[in-house]
Length: 388
Image (tube, rainbow, N blue to C red; front, side, top):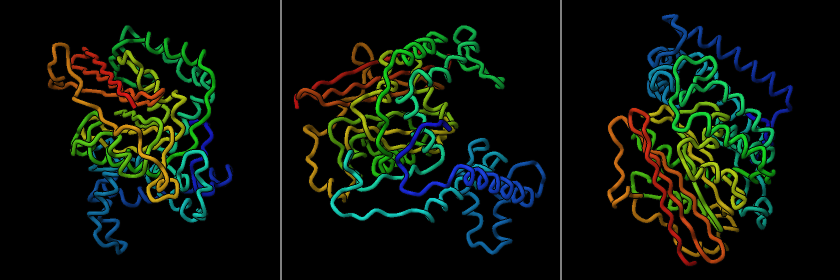
């Protein structure tokens, strides 16, 4: 996790040393529990082993609970087991959540004091350690871009043409632009002036992001449209009201917060650098973050952005005016000649969308990158400008 400051949590955090002691305590207990439940001694917990352990201690619906834990926290074994690392992370995360609930101090709903800057009734704690880390990493990049470049520049030494072999890894990642995209990002960060951090993680915006993750993840869907045809802006408006501008970034496959943010900032194969532009947009002040499993790429992270956001049911929500135009993305981006974009077998599609309202005009930019099984890519950019 990065060292960026976060003002999003409504809970009272543990002092640093106390938090470290708690972390090590949970880790020790988790390893002891895993050793007890790992009856076949393979260093991981199968669903059956976890269910048997739960049942032996009197838990009802043991198999369902065991399966749920493996699906929620396991990525290495497709939800059928938890590795040692995943089990320890699950124990730590659940204990952190309990600590947050135990120390939370709800704010009184008089006027709208907690949302002076963004209209939210109260800031929301990120739903998971990964989500919190993504929020911190984005704020670190925004507030200290030149320092953030130091995390990225060492990657240049691990490229061989377009192939990237991360330290300690055995499988090369075939990129579209190679080291040039990384060099370009480093130069950008060194020139980029510091921006204000995001003011908070919005509960409603995070629910909109989670709604998309829970919809697309199990189905293996890609892109910003939900299985019900919903757009990012439809989902945001289900949980509140956005104002001024809104956008969404989606990332696949990463398991560490810094990797998520760096992948979005490099924006390999996306000429418009739409994901990076979203993170460094002055128009966005509040975000939502959610992550979960994805059947095709293992993990999925969804980040929603807005200039202002009013939580549903808050005083600010009741008085907020609707956006000047109902957000819409128009028809799906098309290839040259008007043909619909088709993802080839074994390929994938990545989409970045940004919407902004400025000087009486609303601009929607959709960047779609299609990668085939051999690594070849095609990128399509569609912009729509409407009068407000």
